[in-house]
Image (tube, rainbow, N blue to C red; front, side):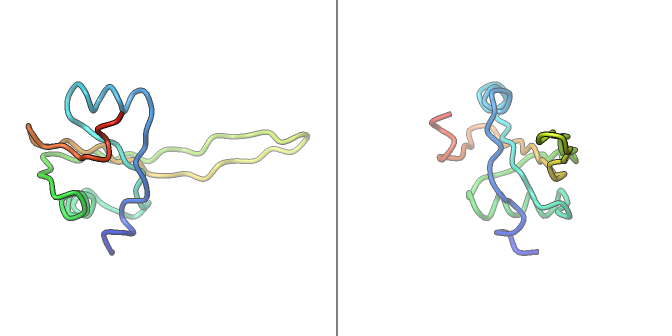
Length: 95
């Protein structure tokens, strides 16, 4: 799988901001079939940083109601990447 297909977008929330400041971890939305090795290689290649650990989890889409009918948001996969001490990703410095 291409590294540009593995990482879809950063997942920016209050909790991810606390993880970034506290333990130097960053969360991403990734392709559903991407594994930990592919995520690690993609982050190291795209952002030129050293990755220590990757944790992945499948997130269920929430149920939503639109008038009388019910719908469901799609399921997605989240990866939390732990960077080496002293490493950072510059696009997240404003968080």
